[in-house]
Image 1 (cartoon, rainbow, N blue to C red):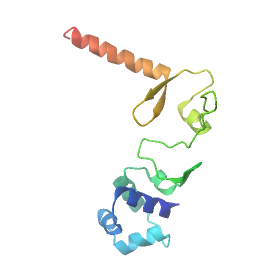
Image 2 (image 1 turned 90 degrees about the vertical axis):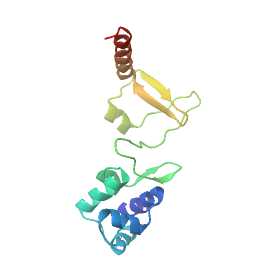
Image 3 (image 1 turned 30 degrees about the vertical axis):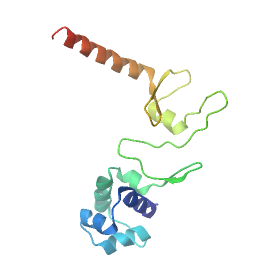
Length: 146
């Protein structure tokens, strides 16, 4: 619920109720009522809150849960939290249907597995290969002095 997200986001960002209230131009008491669920902000104030936290209004008002974790914070703008998957004994996972639908993933499609120190990402092979081709062409043009 909205009130849970407000509490979680404020604590994650290290703000006091007073600081958030000041950022969006209301009293601390009015903000405290939102966190308690006694009242809810209007759409303009929701927009201000979303901007302060770098999220969408939609993610501000929706509560998401993940298996084994419970309630999870709203994802930053442009990012998604699709839930959790379990790796089977053969190292396979099932990508959630909502994710497959969003990205048009189908059976037999090739994906490139990327990673950093914190985790992995899956990118459709055709997108990754097109981007790598563009990078290589740009590098070749630079080396030719163009």
